[in-house]
Image 1: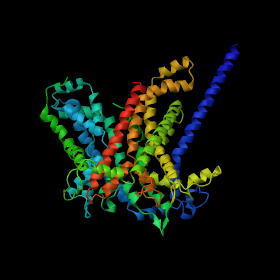
Image 2: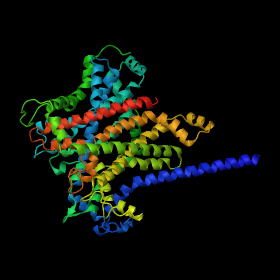
Image 3: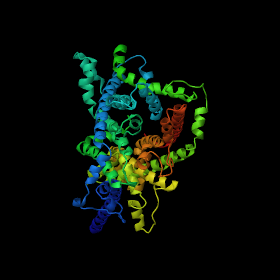
Length: 297
Length: 303
C-alpha cells in the first residue's frame, strides 16, 4: 500500500519533469527564432561577397576567417559615426527637455489646485488619441517657416528641428502624474510645516520618490529617438545631419550595380551595437522600466 | 484636500509644456481642420482657393494606392497583432513556469525591443532573399522549391507574408515583458486552490491565468492595434522608401504612407490638405476600432 503511493508520487514527479522539459524545449525554440535575424546580420557582415552568394548559405565562419574590411567599407559609404553622435545628441537634449517639462506639468496637475485644471487635463487626454501624423504635417510647415529646413541648414538648426517638437509629451505627463498622485498628502503637509516651498518639495521629495517612473520615461524617450525615422527623414537636409535610422536607410550599398549585402549588414551592426551595449549595461533598469510602462495607472 | 487655489504659481509650472504643446500639438490640430477644408492650399504663400467640404477626402479615397494601403494596413493589424499577442502570451506563461535560466531567456526575448527597426528590417529582407537567403535554404531542406519572397517580381502574397513575419517578430518583446510582469503579480493562492481541486493545466490557463491577465491583454491589444494602424517604418525597413519589391513601387504601402506621400509633394498646391485628410481618415478608423474593442472587452475583461 505504502509502496503504491510512493510509486505514484514518483510517477507524478516524472510527469512533472517531462512537462518542464517540454516547456524548456518550446522556450528554446522561440528563443532561437528571436536570435536568428541578429545572427544572420552578424554572420553576413563578416562574409566576403563570394561567401554571401554561396549556395547553400554559409552558416558559420571561424572568427579568424571574418572579413572585417566590410566595416571600414561601410563607414566609407556614409558617415555612420556622425549618425550615432547626432542620435545621441538629439536623444540627450530631447530627453532632458522632456523630463523637465514633464516634471513641472505633472506636479501642477497632481499637487496644485488651479482654475481650469480638470478641463485642461481632459484636453490633454483627448489629444493622446490623435495619430502623430496630424501633428507632423503642420510641424513641418512650422519649422519650415522658422527657416530651419533650408538647403543651407546649419547643425544647430537641424538639432533644434529634431528636438524642440519632442521636448514634452502628454503621455509622459499623464504617466508621471499618476506616480506623483500616489505620494501621500502627509508628506506635503509635513514639508509645509517645515517651511519648505512647493519648489523645494517638488525637487527634494517628489522627484526622488518618483525616480523609477522618471527612469522609465528616460528609457522610452531615448529608445524613441534611436528608432525615429519619419521626422528626421523629413527635416534633415544634409547627409551628415541624419540620425541612425534614416542615415542607414539612405546609404547606398551598391557596387557596379550589385547589392553589397555584407556591407549593408556591417552598417546595420554598427547602428545596432551601441544600443545593445547600453542595454547590457542598464539591463535591469530598462527591463523593469519597460514592463512598468505597460501597466495602466 | 488641497489648500487654497494657486493660479499664478500653477501657470508658471505649466508654462514650458504649454508653450511647446501649443506650438507642436494644439496648433497642428486646429490647422489640420483648416487644411482639410480648403482647396489648393500653398503653404509657402499661405494662399488657397476657397473652402471645400469633401474635396480633399475625395482625393485620398480615389488615390490609386488607397485601397491597397487599406488592405495592407488591415492585414498587418488583424494578422500580426493577434498572432503576436497569442505567441507572447504562451512564451510569458512558459517563462513564468521555469526558474533556471529565466533571466537569460527573458533577456533574449527582450532583444527585439532594443534594436533599430530599419537595421533589423534589412536583415529580414536579406533572410527572405530568393537565392542567398536563409528562409529558402531552410524550406529547401523539406523539399520546398525557393519562393521569390521580396525580390523583383515578387507577388503581393509573398511580400506581405514576409512583412507580417517581421512585424510579428518585432512586436513580441514588449508584449512578453508586460505579460510576464503581469503574471508575476498574480497571487499564488489562485494556483494553489486550483491544484487542490486538481484542475487541468488547460483549465488553469483558461479560467485563472487569462481572466486575471485580461486587463493587460486588453491594454496590449488596444495599443497594438493602434500601433499597427500606423505601420510605416517597418515597411521602410524591409522594402526601403519605395515600399515594395524592386520594380513594384508601393505594393506594401500603408495608410500612414499616404500621409507621407502627400507630404513629400508639399510644394504642390493642395498636397498638405490631402495629407491632413489622410491623417484624419486614419484617426477615424483607429477611433472606430478602439471603441469596438472597448465594447467587446467590457464583457470579457475581469477587473
